[in-house]
Length: 162
Ligand SMILES: CC(C)(COP(=O)(O)OP(=O)(O)OC[C@H]1O[C@@H](n2cnc3c(N)ncnc32)[C@H](O)[C@@H]1OP(=O)(O)O)[C@@H](O)C(=O)NCCC(=O)NCCS
Image 1 (cartoon, rainbow, N blue to C red):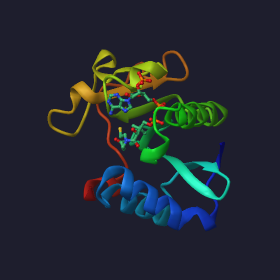
Image 2 (cartoon, protein in one colour; image 1 turned 30 degrees about the horizontal axis):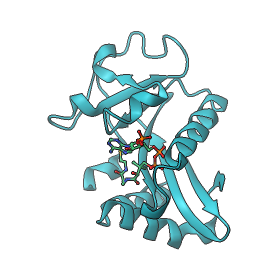
Image 3 (cartoon, rainbow, N blue to C red; image 1 turned 120 degrees about the vertical axis):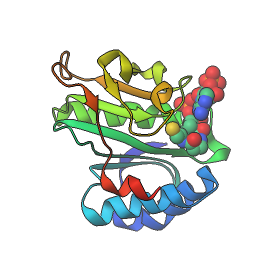
Image 4 (spheres, rainbow, N blue to C red; image 1 turned 180 degrees about the vertical axis):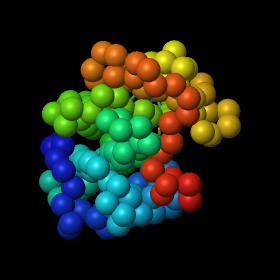
């Protein structure tokens, strides 16, 4: 299994993987929309031979120097083997290289804390999705990156269609 940046030839396989993983096509379309508008800041795939078995996307948040992790998908036949973890860690490393200050994610409270994500409310950051506070997390890549920032941070506009 190799983690690498997406290539144009991967696009149909990414779409099929993400649609199947979520059981609906909203997240797969979101990736296409982000790509089309130039907001797919990073798109990594997990590939095994000629198969795409995992994908992670990142897009800019409304606060400069911060980024959102979404969506993340691993093919059902390949779950619980650390592929999700490998995609998250590779994404974090790339964001460090890009001097991103913080990564936000809306997701499972049982999963993302494993990767150093803390509840965003600890930083006085709110989520625009009603009831989402419990599931909104952030990982500072530079200590103090969120200092002086509070309120509600927004995802890229393409997320409004989800
Ligand atoms: C979430 C997902 C990407 C995890 O991929 P993965 O390659 O299986 O993840 P890893 O192997 O790194 O980690 C698996 C562990 O995380 C746990 N985990 C994964 N997703 C979880 C969730 N939503 N809630 C609770 N635990 C979860 C698994 O139970 C497993 O725990 P264990 O190690 O104690 O057995 C995959 O399950 C998936 O594609 N799900 C459907 C799409 C989705 O929900 N994406 C996430 C949106 S936030």
